[in-house]
Length: 419
Image (cartoon, rainbow, N blue to C red):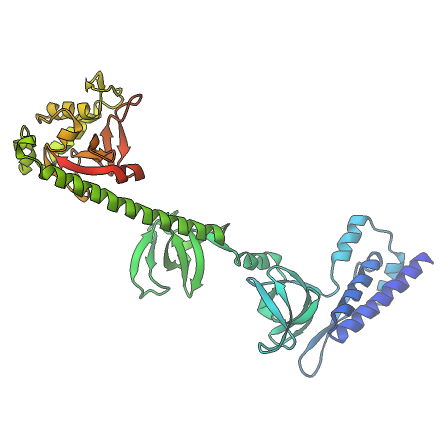
């Protein structure tokens, strides 16, 4: 008797759901009632047959049917455990789909773009497909029912999730060709080539334009277009807000670096002007022939660097002028003397001992100077690639350091060539 009662309830639910489906379920409260009924009869209705009908207008309606055999099987069905019951309860008797949209999409009152909006569905949100018509689905979502374009619904949750992630995330990709990829100004083979990315470089996908993908690349997030076929999707996502924050940070750093470079140029110009206007008798002349001898070539400058490299690790000693310990100007004087070049003992005087060299024309072996807000306070030997070898300070050793740090740029006071 108990099973018969359950069967009657199940059949009643089936008839109700079928009726709602045939009438195309225009009222969402009826759809809610339908789902409540399905939950209460889940044990007895684990298997349901879905039939469809199509009217003269081409609109398809979904109807649920049952057979005498299925009713008998339901009556004889054993009790199921809680997990199975839950799984059955979550299974929709109407087709379940997922919103395949970036952001959200409106549910329209009629299957056309101009129709009024009755509600909305968000990316990857689960919806029920109530009916199908040409190019459109009628779906139930968020307490409303309305029409959306078929491409805005998918039965594959992974596809829907991929679309939804694009709302507030960018996807990362790797450059795959051995020869790298050409970066262009727009998505066309006729567009100007402005750069390239190398195999293995990770880029950020921003948009698509035909056969091209708009990317952000490099540490400074430059923008450009590369051919789609040259990218491998890494499956990793990064938040758009995070990327935009990094773009702002990089721009601010570049602006600050430019400001500091301008300050450095001003410092160098002031230092050069100051020393060039001093009495000629105060200008060191002991290395005139060496400093003015352009025929010496850059080989002599490299020789100075090579000599200085021999003393890496020697401890800093204030006033030191030998391999047992150097201060900054003592190292310079000692290394220069080993190369047959005589320079004064202190950094401020060494600033006079040669030909002034602009920052952009530095060569290995040039002497680079820094100020502490007043006169010259430090000197090093330029080794190339934005680096110098120097004796920094008490407690440190002779080593190679960058002259491109914010501190060094803002305190830069010019350079001279003594070889």
